[in-house]
Image 1 (cartoon, one colour):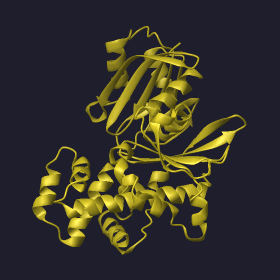
Image 2 (tube, helix red, strand yellow; image 1 turned 90 degrees about the horizontal axis):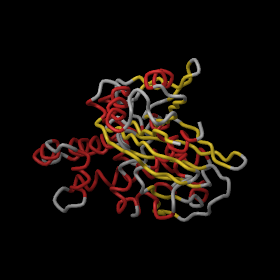
Image 3 (cartoon, helix red, strand yellow; image 1 turned 180 degrees about the horizontal axis):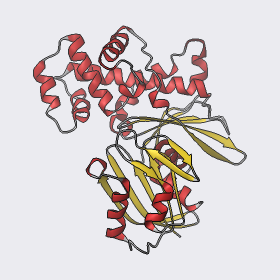
Image 4 (cartoon, helix red, strand yellow; image 1 turned 135 degrees about the horizontal axis):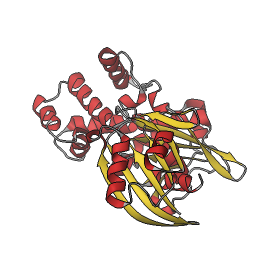
Length: 332
């Protein structure tokens, strides 16, 4: 059978048409779209199908899309408003528009959770071995355009995924500098959520804060801001020797990342493992493999021994969400 899978984010949308037979998959077509250049998701699907398939009689009848936002059920349809876009997506409307039998929307990190099951060892890098508990709850967390969090719960013979909006919980600082960062954010925004600091824009926010807090060189800040992707520029500067504030920003980012992942692991008893996904983690892997991430992950006082039992791995395959959607679509 042929299925359409999609990974819909605030920055990019990936669509993939594939043929699935049992556990074997052949990708027929795949394309990346800049989300902000389209008025609606339907226009993206139309562009893809017009390019690779028959718009009026598509060769696929099932589709599943992972969306960066909460998914709700309304009148037998799954619906979502994308968090960082103006898109409103309705599965029933997509079925009607493109003559399909079944369309399902899931939270993007739910899609990643379902994709985890189908990854091989080479698609993961272990940060902490831990002691994996068979059938234990698993946690997926990942920073990208925003911060995603999902739980995997064992159900008889497989994992089911519970999507969350954990990225929007309150940011909890751990030291004097992070307390100052919290105060900086509250003065600017009235509230500080985790994804305000754990995301691509969040890394840039930390860097801006340090220039304010430490009295940094305005020329360095202006140089970073001129870059097309300021967060990537900060990450690159953190690996150099000239911009000390970029190195500090990355260190703070990694420490907050580890602490937040550890908080979610503790609150969910994720003894089945923590999987760090999202677009940023593979790009800063050498920073995550250092001390600050695991130090903060395990720094939980009398419960530190519990977090040290948790296996922690970074997901290297950027298509894990598409993989999850593909398998969900197949089983619709």
